[in-house]
Amino acid sequence: MSSNPASAAAHMRHWTAARVHFLQIDDLRDAEEKHLQRAAALHLQLARAPPPHDLEKWDELLATYRATLAKVRDEQRHLQQAQDALAALRAPTAVGGRPGSASERSGSAGSVQATVVVPTIGRHFRHPGSEVKRPKLKFPNIVVGPGTNVAVHTMVDGQHAWIWAIVKTVKNGLYEVADIENESPAFSVTEHDIIPLPPPNYPDFPQGCTVMACYPDTTAFYKAVVVAPPKKGSPEPMYQIQFFDDDNVPFRNVPKTHVTQYVSDKIDRM
Image (cartoon, rainbow, N blue to C red; front, side, top):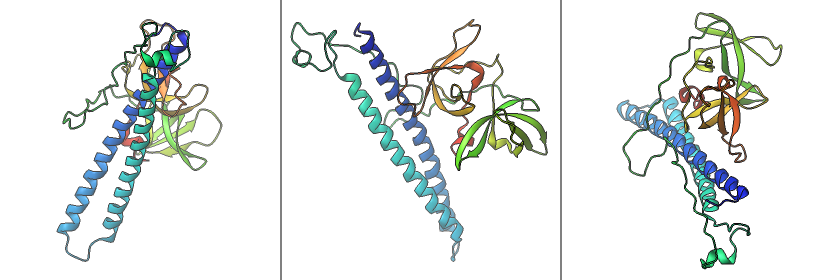
């Protein structure tokens, strides 16, 4: 790898960007598979049902295919962005020179070729045609009760959002929660709308794990990937977190207790 610090930082930024896009592609492929499985089930139900068919099922089938198509378009976008990041990663940079100079392209004896070792893309990556399913990481369940800090799903300016809240009461399957950032009235949600935040002694999420993390200086949670878990024995454990759609910032430091599980069944249904 080039000894030029600026060049090394650029390489790190490009491979991190490529890795995040490949992780996103894999998550989208999982969502597409779920949609197609639902579509197959609807086809079977419609084939077995005598006419006239249930129009609601036809509507659901149409919506399922539309959702699948939207995921495919997102997949194409991330694939292009991953390709761009890899192309930038492969672009040679001479030590002390400008990127892509003529001497580098010619491969003359006086030129220096930058060799970059790209880390493994991550646990989500699947080779084409592979039948191996990605492993599901298992973490201890967190008991949710009054006083538990949670990420809660709500609507902010007409958009789906996950914000930091605290549980006030639990009754009949409903959780009364209050936004920790302001004095707005508490509101009730179901278990499907909350993800508990982990206690300080919770096991660390490993490198490459998809998580929900609180963006620095906010109380909003976003999808992210762990670049590095907290250092052992640190008095203030911090993750290095790469947020999706964060302008290719290599990572941001996020306190351990501000990072929680990415529960796809709750988040991807939005």
